[in-house]
Image 1 (cartoon, rainbow, N blue to C red):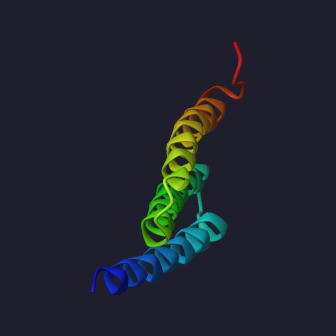
Image 2: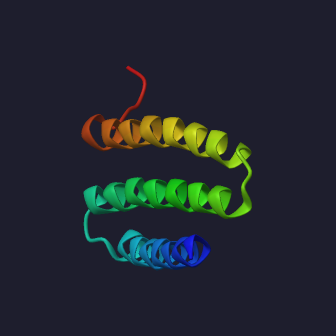
Amino acid sequence: MTEWALRIASVAVAIALLCNGWRLFRGPTPGDRIIAIDTMVINVIALIVLIGMLGGNTTYFEAALLLAMVGFVSTIAYCKFILRGDIVE
């Protein structure tokens, strides 16, 4: 029963990724695109964790943690670039 719930959750996260991709390419402002990328990172983290739970492999959880750290830093860098036009001052 748990395996079915994980598979349904994986499909739901994949659909959310498709919706985020649509917002990324269709977004009218750079802010919309940055939020879409950040949300895509969160959904990819969720998908990696779900795959790790389905496979029973703990390596996926470490990969999700690394992606979370990189995703946070990249979102801050994108926002800083949009606001100031330069990342490093």
